[in-house]
Image (cartoon, rainbow, N blue to C red; front, side, top):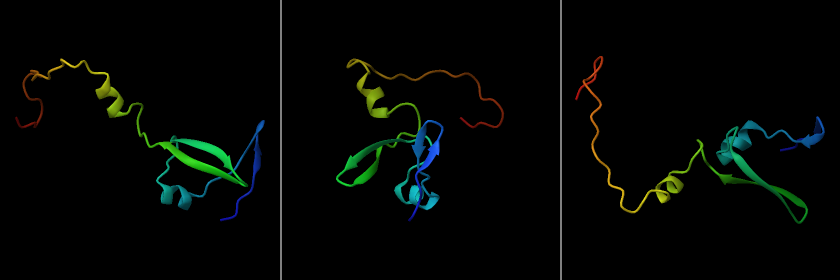
Length: 82
C-alpha cells in the first residue's frame, strides 16, 4: 500500500491505513517500537496493553504470603441476585 511521508509540525509522519491496523491488531494508543532494518522502517507492537497495567506485573508485586478473603459488600441493590 502506497503512502507518503508528510510534515506534522516539527516532525514527519505517515498515515497507517485502517486495514493495516486491523490486520496487525494495532489500535490507537498502542505502544509500538520503530526501528530501521537494512533499507526498511519496521513498526512492531511493543506490548498489546489495552489499559495501564499488565496483570503479570501486578501479580509479581504481590507478597508471597498474600491470601485472598471474601468481602461483605452489603445488601443487594436493584435487581441483583445473590
